[in-house]
Length: 131
Length: 131
DNA sequence: ACACCAGTTTACGTTAACGTCAAGTCCTTT
DNA sequence: AAAGGACTTGACGTTAACGTAAACTGGTGT
Image 1: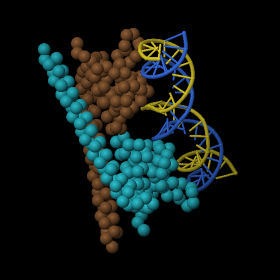
Image 2: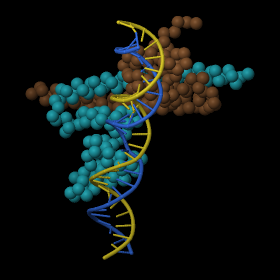
Image 3: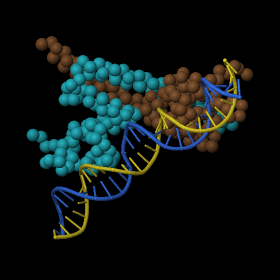
Image 4: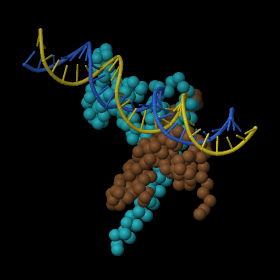
């Protein structure tokens, strides 16, 4: 057995700059599954939950909903893949990859457009301040 | 004067596969400003509003909130830029461009990770079905 | 023993982004 | 004139993702 650095809910919350309530909500939604110390006293969080939480928060930053995030992080979690067929999981993964690619394309386009406006704008500003 | 193809709210809604209520809500939030036919009878939508609506819906697909979208489309709208200084607008625009770039990076990383899992997964599946 | 603190459950409150329904207006068609 | 259809303005309902507060429990220092 390796020494596992298990932390409490408020420690984890502090580490990620969120509240304990948020962490409990993610558990309630099935996104986290902390271990419980000696028959239901406290929640303890290890490396696995910390990794999952990172994924969740990144997903949030990128504008995904919690249910979308849940699908993504459960997609290739072999423990949870039982039940629905492997083939379906693979097909589903390909669909999500396709969607991600489209999002990247759209974001890139948006950035290019904003950059274009930005340059026109700064150029206009230069001309105005020159005279 | 050029012939302007002005359409009603339900026509516009049908065109973009949304509801009239959604369009009115965007107006209420200050994202759209349709012309009103002969003293407050009906809303009519031209090319400008259609373009704005496109921007709004793309922003939504990318996970931005309506207030974020509002800031972005008003950012380089010269009519609305009056009041706040040009310099501030430019600085703000650069900040948003930076954020967009970070989002693209994160999305690209997420896609790479998912692709990695995906390949491991399909390889595992191949081995299972071979024997 | 008592206070205190960190954690727990339960439950009600809040905001964004609409959905849904009621009631009234305006124009056209029969 | 009456009916029908599209639009209008309220106004209340709904869901996701938490915030917040109350009341309870369980270990710890004094």
